[in-house]
Amino acid sequence: MEKRTFVGLNKKPKSKKEWQEWHRKYALAFFSDQLDRVAHSASKKNYVMSLITKWEKRFREECSRKRPVETIENTRLVKDQINFVTEYVACAIINGTSKENLNRIRHFLSMQSGQNIGERIELRFFGGWPIEAYAYVDSLRDIDIADVFFITNFDSMVAYRKKMKHWTGRAAKHFLNEIKKDILFDMPSAVFTVDHSDAAGLTGFEIGFDVDEFDLNLNMLRCTPPSFAKRFHPGRKKV
Image 1 (cartoon, rainbow, N blue to C red):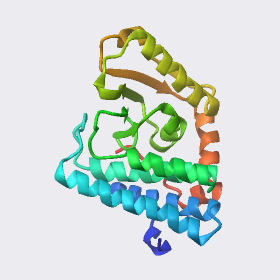
Image 2: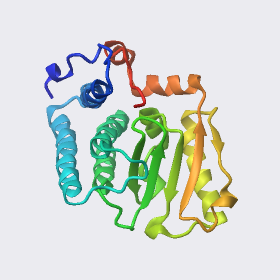
Image 3: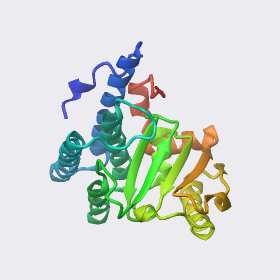
Image 4: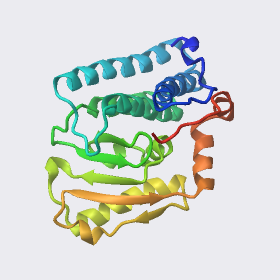
């Protein structure tokens, strides 16, 4: 990626359109910066970049044939989703360029599509930036919810079971416990607003999140080096 693409990221945008353009540049800069930090060989850098490039091409083609389902009206859903996935991979690459981690990233990208084929768990994240983002996974082992929170700062998540099966109280309780293990490992002060008994009979199970700013900043240090944050001072914004 050409560094000149990121010129202007340290200047505060003034309009909503400028903020949206800034967010795209930020996603690309974050991804590029993480590759420089972690991937110490040209071949591994090129491999990860090819994974993202091929996924984005496939995703855009799928969305051109049929627009993804949106819960909140958003004309930028496709672009926002591309930024979200790009930033997620940037976080995932922190775990290194081992064969195991690269395969995990490749598998994650293979599951991200324009439409839910029904065979996967669907996770939708609301109230952050972007206002709505989603991910399809075979299991919660395929995604790091703490990283998603860092990327989007979402307010709530709605989970749908495979084949849109209705939730049972027992299944919802087990799912919530798995989510807590993930989030609390990185953000011990996180507070969850949910009643898993209310999920029984529903297709969508909603979980609210509230994270202490101190925990959020610690996770930010893990995912974003101070030098990167300093270079791109304005930061992200909910639009």
